[in-house]
Amino acid sequence: MSHIKIKSFFDETTCTVTYIVIDTPTNKCAIIDPVLDYKQNSGRTGTESADLLIEFIRSNKLDLEWIIETHAHADHLSSAPYLKDKLGGKTTIGEHITDVQKIFKEVFNLEKEFLVDGSQFDYLLKNNQSIKLGESQIQVMHTPGHTPACVTLVVENNAIVGDTLFMPDFGTARCDFPGGDARNLYQSIQRIFSLPDSTKVFVGHDYQSANRNYFAWETTVAKQKQDNIHINQVISEDEFVHIRQARDSNLDVPKLILPSVQVNIRAGILPPKENNGLSYMKIPINAL
Image (cartoon, rainbow, N blue to C red):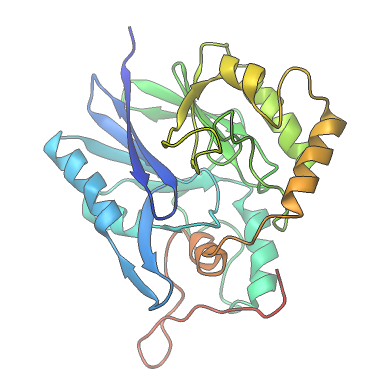
């Protein structure tokens, strides 16, 4: 009998799916990949998306243990600090966030005080370790390729894969960001494919596809292995790399990548306020 319940929240503005994973015997829960609303034209943040999570947790009398990022997102800002302030819990991400921090500290020429040791997060996740969620265990799989720090979270017969895989009719994550690597992504997906075929796969985004007029974010390992348009049982590693690199060469840069990465490598904390009391984002010219 399953002790785990997963509730999804879809943010249509960024096409992001946030998950609340609940250990039903204890009502302990984890939030995965929460969104901070951000208006690019004004630089204003908002908490409407995060407040929906808070309302759900409080109305169901849940106890938040973890706020988990599957990676440092390039398409939305994280609301982890706001959620932690309201509900408690520990912020966490894969330990290879340090590699991402080193890359982007240089790209953005961040302040010398910015540490590249992951200490902005309460806890760093290691490959193959398990963390407790009530009476359940969340197993961590390091699945790099989209970024060096990506992790997949496996709990009971469920795998929350972040941006590593999308729905089968949309394929896989891009690998052209700094630190990304298509061969690493192929190998990471083989790890996911080694899970039982019945494992439910929960993806981090959905953008629909040419043949589907609705959003979806839940599939299975079996369906991914059979139907994924970029990677399946008959596509070799070299073929996948060719497919992925060809597609990446024609993709636009995500519209929120510059603010998102600057905030998310800080565990969702805004850049330090300057002497006028305001935080500022940097826009590197001709860098990405």
